[in-house]
Amino acid sequence: MKHFIKPSFNIAGKKNLLEKNKNFNIAYGVDKNFLLGAAISINSVLINNIDTDFNFHLFTDYIDDEYIQRFQKMITKYNSNIIIYLLDAEELKQLSTSDFWSYATYFRLIAFEYLSTNINSILYLDADVICKGNLKELFQLNLANSFAAVVLDVNNMQQSSATRLKLTDLNGKYFNAGVIYVNLKKWIENDLSKKSLELVRGTTNFGKLKYLDQDALNILFQTQNIYLSRDYNCIYTLKNELAYHDLSKYKNTITDSTILIHYTGVTKPWHTWGINYPASQFFFNSYIHSPWKDQPLKIAEKRTELQEKYKHLFLQHKYVHGLLCLIKYKLLKK
Image 1 (spheres, rainbow, N blue to C red):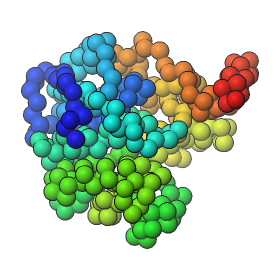
Image 2: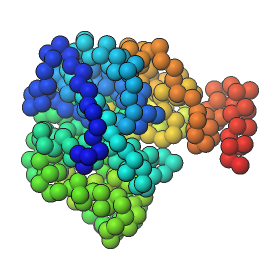
Image 3: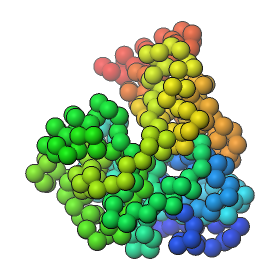
Image 4: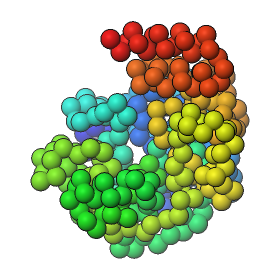
């Protein structure tokens, strides 16, 4: 997959060195819409792990000078590095996508392939993952013969995924790919780059995959994983606020022991209508203590975003704005 990589930019911290075998390695794969999320996620890792050195590998098909300058400002405080890999994603845009999964979901496959030639393991984080604890114990894991260290997806995904993929062993073992600590030695030894592309292209007996590369990784890893506690991938959706109306109920899910929060769903904490919830405070704290604190939050652009935004605005008693958003959604729906 190396032909996808165009230029790369190394933003070095105080050490000014890429100590790939010493520093802990974390990768992200994002398009333009998730660049802000990735930046705040990286900042959350740094401010909660000040005694640890990292190499952050950001794979994206869009970058600008302002974004690089903000990263340079952030990284000067830490003994860490950020490497930005610019991708040519035209070929990936031909693969299956959905309202919730863009072509950028496949960037993680490129990251695994490209980095496997230099390092033995990588922690991959989705851009909507925020760190609120220490990651050292995770990086001290011995992956040995495991493909990865993972966290189970939510309960209602277990039986349905096993049935859909016709893999009974997956029931109770189907993991969420938003947080995944991958054994890159096993990745390259088993030629998983080629096999994963075959799966996501729908050219195998599994046919078209509903959850794209997440399904592919579950198939390829064959449940040969270390299964971590929910603390390392605390799946939380801000849609809960619409259902519960009790804005403190998030504490039943996001607890003191939670290390990585995964904000799934359409509404993200970097959206203008999602930032002010108590459940979003962990994102907000990283945001206001980052060089991006003066950058505007994201507005609703997609139909699915408008559909959720007007409901959140009504919940927040912003009735006029909510009504205008509802009208815009209805017009766009037509």
